[in-house]
Amino acid sequence: MASLDFDLEESLFRAFYAQQGAALESACAAFTALVAAVVAQAGGVDIAKVEGRVKEVDECIRKFTRKYRPALEERNLPYDIQSYITDLVGVRVVCLYEDELEKVAQILHAHFTVIDVTDKVAAVESTEASFGYKGLHLDLALNEQQRGQPEHAGHAHLPFELQVRTIIQDAWSVLDHK
Image (cartoon, rainbow, N blue to C red; front, side, top):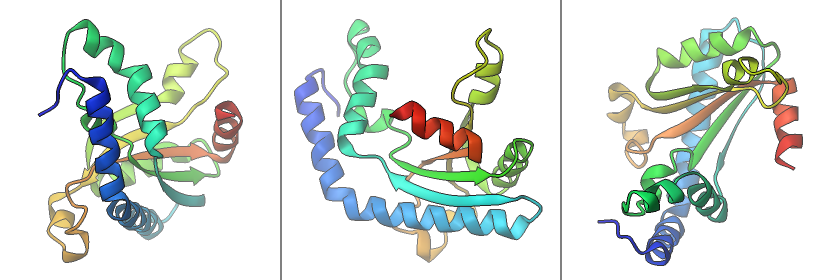
């Protein structure tokens, strides 16, 4: 059970991460291959690349501290770091054209359990300054059928974030993160 001691919770998260590192890498490879196969099998979409990554532990802690810690402290709630880092495993599909983002999203909606969707294209375009990072983020989990397959037994419980971007959005994101 999570506590109100941030240093303890950070230490526990780091221990979890160290212990699960190989399993997270394995899950990342499996999710990336599965997403690539699903998109390729559906056809009709020009994909530049499909890649995956496991978020670095320090990046997880920084994200938690920036996005979630202040609100938890304000409400005197425990620091359950692991439950807030939904993009510990991430997969990215890079399309050639912007109109393919929604096509990819629809393909993946049909093959995975969708936990949440963040449309950063709509968010940025609805502001006066419509220049900035754009992309579609989906928090996904394996569907019931996939969870039952032996090859997914070790990571069937893990959610992952899927980012769908165009080549231009991907390049902008790389520059923006620098």
